[in-house]
Structures are given as structure tokens and as C-alpha cells.
Amino acid sequence: MTLNQLSYYLAVCKHQNLTKAAAELSVSQPGLSVAMRELEEECGFPLFERRPNSIRLTQQGRAFQREAEHLLGQYRRLRQHTELIARENSILRVGVATMGAGGVFPRLRRRFTRDCPEITLEVSEDSTERLYHKIDQGELDFAVTVSIALPGEDYGYVTLSNSRLLLCANQNNPIVRQKPGSLKQLGDTPLILLSERSSQTKYLKRLFDRAGCTPNVIQYSDQAFTILQYIRENAACGFLPEDIAAQESGLACFPMFEIDMASVTAIWRRDRQSFAAFDHFIRYLKKTGNR
Image 1 (cartoon, rainbow, N blue to C red):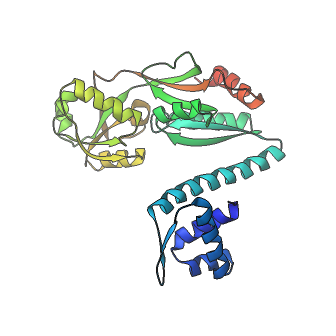
Image 2: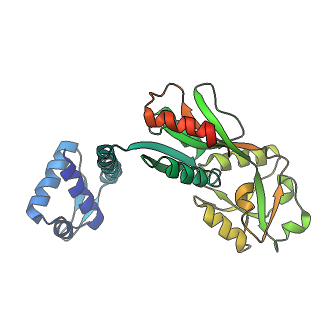
Image 3: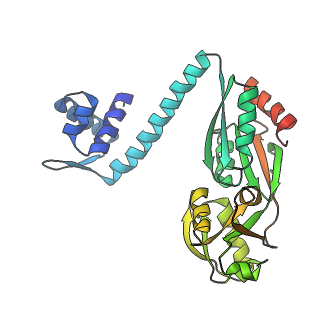
């Protein structure tokens, strides 16, 4: 199984047509057909359902497509990193918690990039729960997480800031007149929350459950902008970190007594094999991270 075969396969997946895929790849259609049959033989299962004028992916073919995309993505990153290393640059892989760390990390990244241009930060977003998993698996060097509990003894960390989730509503929303201070007061108020897999939403749902009420969630979203837009349009209320809420005019924001103050922390594995850029970033965090 070669990288060329995987690239060819993804082109066929894209077009669902051998002729169009061959044209994009600048190869002959018979040659592409042979490459796909050889790939199927090596996999040991059919990748396509062949029809007179088109092909369709099998269920196994769709699963293989995801793996091929992941592998080729890793290969592209390896090539990019190799080019950086050739220029004597270093790379740090940093994960950032969706929304909760958004008010802190851009400032940190701007300062660090300015002060340490020889170190490149490769940044991705995910839930705090997933970031811990990626740190443990060695997929990330650092993660900027949001949690009401500090990291365990297996992790080094620097607290960057503290923040509380606020219920945010358009100033014309009926809930504003009630000046709510508890989740139970929200009743049937339409809410938009982060995706169900996010640590923030799991935490909020536990709090609603303890309060003995069920939130009226009309939509889940991976995008903080979508949540903010729903609030602006008075289509729903949502929960935003206070540092983000403070930057948006026209919102009415209320702390809920059930929601604890959270810490935004940069974490890393204590047993992680260190290198120069890794150690430098830790020193930088300890010196300037909470300013």
C-alpha cells in the first residue's frame, strides 16, 4: 500500500467516477482501475460497488476513506514539519479548548510568536476531555484547558486565568426581566449549547440534572460564533465565558449560582520527553502566561 495509491483512492472517492478522477490525477483510466483493484486485493474487502457509469463506496470503503484521509493528513504535516526543521525551526503542538480558552490563547500566541519566532505553534481545537486524551497519547505537547478542577499529579500546569460561564441573552429576551440566578429559573427558555461531546455541555447537563430540571436545548453547535449569533438574534439564550461576554455589547448576562468558577490552564505531561522548544515554552508560560 503506497501513498500514491491512497491519493488515487481519495480522488476516486471525491468524484465517484474513474474517468473524472483519472483526469484530475493526469493518469490513464485503465491504470487507475488497476491501482484500485490492487488496493482492494491488499485490503481484503471491496472498496467500491461498480456500476455501468459510476461507482459507489461500500460501507467498508467509507471507513477506509476516513483512515486514508487521516494518514495523508499526517504525512502532509510531516512534510511541513520537515521543512521547518530544515530551517532550524521547532514545532510545538498545542490543543485549545473550544470557546472557553478562546479569550486567553490568542493573546498568548501573539506574544509568544513575537518573542520566539523560531518556534512554530501548530494549534488545534477540541473539548477539554479530548485534549487530556491527546496529551496522554502523545498527540499534543501542550493543551489549554478549561475546568473547575485543577489537573492531577501526572500533569504540569500553569493557570492562565479564571473565568465563569454566564447565561447570556439578548436584552429584549423575556428572561431578562426575571434576572435569573439559577438554572431552574430558565424553565422552557430556548437554549443553544456547544456540541453534546463537549466538556462544557456535559458539565451543564449535570448541573441541570442536579437542579431537577431539563434544559430546552433547541440546537447544539461546535462554533462559538453560532451561539453568539443566536443570542444576538434573540433566537435562544446561551452560555459564554465572562471574558468573551464582556466584549459583546447588547447582551444581558447573569451568573448562575450552580456554576463554579473555572480555571484556564496550560497543561503538559510531567513524564513527557522534553526538548529545547518544549522547555522554553514552559518557562515562557511561567514567566508571562498569566499576565
